[in-house]
Length: 194
Image 1: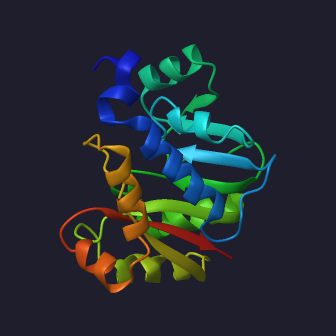
Image 2: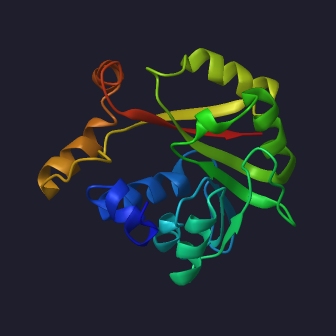
């Protein structure tokens, strides 16, 4: 794996994808505020940090090559397993993208995150891979009684013309049509809070 181009290789057009993800991290559920601390689990090379400059970003990744690449770009990323990591002090928010399947015990993992996260957890959820009701039940049992789901239609593996990308972002708010699209493609972004 060539970590020097990890973000560019994993995302066909990383700027609109990561920008939109960052917008939803800020706004979905309780608002993320300037100066808040964000723990980004399974962060890869920490590319999300560039789109959240107003927060104190701490990335966590199990691949030492990703940690090295992040450091070379001036990002703060720690080498650790997301299941076991506990920060030195609480975070306002914790994020987890494209990595829910790395959890050894989802409910215990969500409880562990609740122990150090003060405001909210934001993660992506593929409804074709996980039953949404099961994940929401695990969130409630782990101490996250409140949640908000938002379809996320900006594609990871395809670069789109700006007008089509903007139309997809608008389509995220179409209610039943958006939920129908999720049966075949795309993911939810989930915010959970106490």
